[in-house]
Amino acid sequence: MRVVNVKPASRLKAPKVAQALAWPGHLIERHGWEYEIWSGVELAPLENVRFLAAYRHPGVVPVDEVERAWQEVVDGEELALAERRLAGDREREEARPALTALLWSGRLTTDLTAQPLSGECVGHVTARLVRWRSGSLW
Image (cartoon, rainbow, N blue to C red):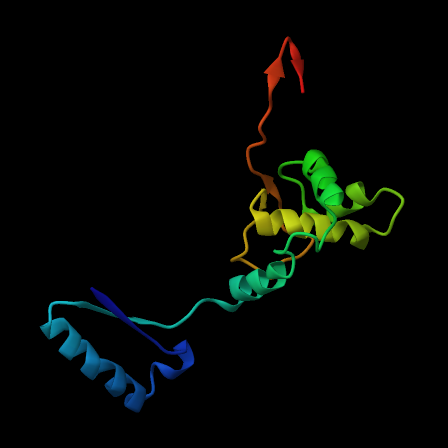
């Protein structure tokens, strides 16, 4: 069994907080359980996931737009370049929801830990299934 106590990192050095976190650890460990103190996550990934979560529900972005983006997105391309290319004659921001939906679904990935999500992030395509039948792709 593992018991986890969570406090914001900014509060861990306060003597009263350190003392309040220490005593349950001694008690828990005497019972043979594991005790850990967690201080949360970095802000960039948390903010990125919160942003992407807006695109988690089906229907927020039309399915045909998401599928078109999925077929046309290029592995290793910066998201800003993908937006411009996918938008065509439209404003590039109009292509953003489809890319964001792909990121939320995991079909397109990028590093969410290093920085706030931006056009400089590089997108990576997860494996696409390709069918081969009678010498042609379908």
